[in-house]
Image 1 (cartoon, chains in turn orange, cyan):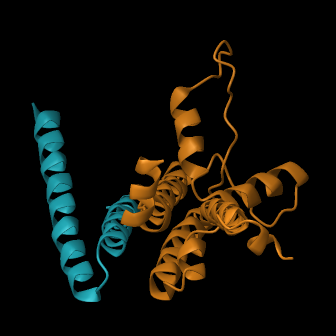
Image 2: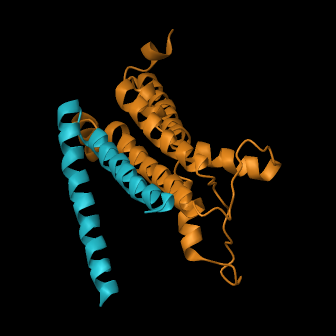
Length: 166
Length: 62
């Protein structure tokens, strides 16, 4: 005798639906994190190709221009009691980490001394380069939030009604 | 003007375009409204930057 026929209320079907929903939520969260790591990835996976490619090229192109101007992502001093603590540097770092895949590449390059990226902190263009990285990162936060609103934030009217009645 | 000055002006034009174009891409689903909104926002942004520049220039003379 099958599980479904033993349970006429269809609890196994409900369980399967719940499991599917949980798996689906897991993959959606992974896509949000993926969009944070690689700009436009979520849109590409959802077959919104032109939007994904445009976001990827614009944000990574801007980041790359920042690197060409001898910029990089610098880890700031987080201890507020330290004399070198600077809130602007902390906020800049948080903004730049919006394009986290490219930023992590910069941090790894700095940490393991790969010499792929060659920043020059004394360069007069270093601050301008940091602005390029900052714009790239901050705009990716917008893109991730927009992806969330489009594909996760809105619920089907039936689902909302079911939740309310439960 | 020095290379540094031109680079900063070019950067403000380019970064303004990136921000406004991306907002258009996220807001609309067709290219025509995307380009129109980009142009409208970009002109407003650059206009505001020019006004700020003029104000700073005038204040520096005072």
